[in-house]
Length: 464
Image (cartoon, rainbow, N blue to C red; front, top):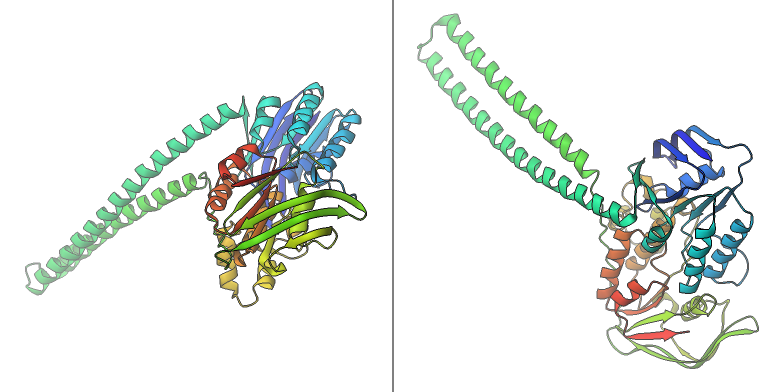
């Protein structure tokens, strides 16, 4: 159905993909995995024909119908993110494509919608390539994995759990090699120090012998020079060994998974009521979405909001953040607007034309460029490659990390997260959870991710 040969992609000044060769045959069931920003969405766009590669060729079978569903499918309707995704998936499948390319299709979907998605994709007879971080979806549908790492695509035939076991074995082997190289590096350093000390002592003895005339004339100078040359050759050899060790260490370290260090400081309020709703309701225009709400959250409380798509979870989350497009009625006690932070599941609050560095500098005008860069580095925006990339060109996971970075720079009294695990790879999901569990401020989380909510251990659950 689809073939790609020697694909290259330079994206916003960085080499994102290099020498990628792929074959997507009829009936394939392939999961495309990789860290956030590794190029999964860009590869799908190139295969779909909506993005032109920098080099290489893509061959599509004559007459092949290709359907592509991106991870962001916003329209102007008031439908929830899950409803919009379900609508986009239904349109793609109704077109009866030969090739179906999906980018994070289970994002925003509730349990029922996820089951329906899996059931319908199992009945799909064409070639399926799905970029996802959803382990359950991969295990249910896919029998082959394409892993993007370091701009290259590696292939693995088998289930995701088998791939994870294989990857863990390779990481353990890499760790053993690093320990061995660290030992060799220490030994090489000690050998160089000993050789330098020996050479210095030898030179000192030679100079004394020349001065004492124990070596005669030209012969003494020649012998002293020969000794210096021998010592220099030995030191050069040791330094070459050190360079070889460092090169091998760097090759191994490029395979190491980067784990970001988040720091979400709590708001400055330390006690008392943060949120209180009494007989409250929320509505779009004249249509009431939720009514009869009663809620109290103190400093440090954690609330999980659950429910099916379209039940009003995201509407309530935005109402808590003071969204003027949502009508509120009843009694609402909330922190001031500048003490509330929202991670929106569509990242609509991010400045799409700005770069991460510009966005943070605008929010924190008193910070120096160095402070901004150091803060962004904690969230994996390291160097100009990503810090200077427009937000509109960032992956979903990178946008999520930027939202977290902006929140952390200006501590909120109330932190509201709407589907925070959408678009995040496994490493980022795990670290986000660790941070939120120790976040001492007031936390409201909207999520379909049962495992994430269970690990977060919220004190209150509001089921809509």
